[in-house]
Image (tube, rainbow over all chains, first blue to last red):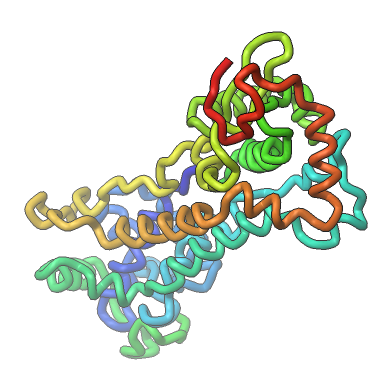
Length: 174
Length: 174
């Protein structure tokens, strides 16, 4: 069982976008360069995050990505599920209904206890990731790093949106 | 991110072994037949569970597997880690130290916040699985199924250990 590297990339890039100036987007190349990541592969994850409604893709030669809602409203789980999908890592094959010891369907009206235990653990994992937002991660940056990354994000960011300084929470499109 | 099918197989088989008569082992073929599983592939998981100290492999023509300790002392996490390994699904590549935005090593004395969040979620998952034992799973079997599976486990079980009816908790070897 292994999570895609895209999870680490996605959470770090979204946290950097949370520091970008209000309403301005950062190009894929800027995000890739900041963390030394392969552009094409990172691009696929950024697109997945846009499809999931976490990022807003700004088109045009000076386009890029910005947060689609405020950093307080995006959880680490949102990013993880955008990159990895939301399906549980445990896939129940209902083996209690197979083989010489097979239970009859009417004996299986309640979910299998093994399945239920795995589902509860999966929900515990998701609840833990749901409890942390991008804003929390920004708050946990080491002293000085927040200011430095804010400056780097501003350098990497393109011009502001015609919709004005709506900030990352702005849903204005261009 | 996907767990091996062996997790479902391992937990179900261990729960069936918890119902076998005290001190008696069940052959791999008996376990595979009960759940309609491929013998060779199941055998690899049973061996992993024996290496992890959950099962005891009883050698000889009438040998097989029995629990190495009592069902109250074996958690679902024990089985999951025996089959899947105990490593976290999140592998931190420390991308905060890479690229044009790289932090210096002295700025990274504390673990990365992203890494810490993922580690906490992983621990929540493991804690949930650690809270349930094979004895709990036996208790959760639907009415009548416990008795039926106890009978089937007895039919599949080989003769008792020369060490006597020590029960599944007995560590006596043969």
